[in-house]
Image (cartoon, rainbow, N blue to C red; front, side, top):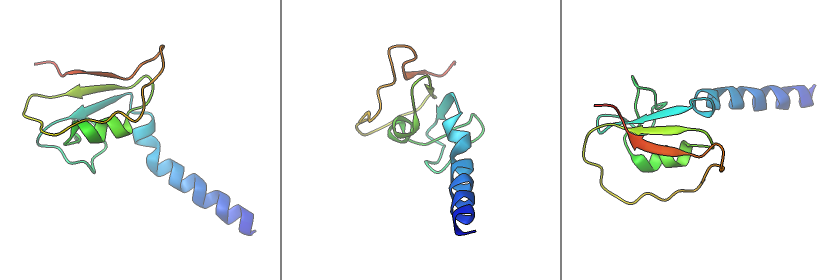
Length: 90
């Protein structure tokens, strides 16, 4: 019974991270918040936070604005598929 509870807790924790794990595209905007999911309606505020969340195959779209600070890439992606950072349309 205890193992079943532990399994349930682990599954619940994984489910909470699922939207970010399958995002594919993360949006960054100066009006965002680093606690957001990174969707177009709920963007992340800093490029650094997007770099921490992005995984192989993800695209980070950076919307117009001023961003200060350094960006340290912890994950590099793979040759196919890489992590891509680019400006958002417009």
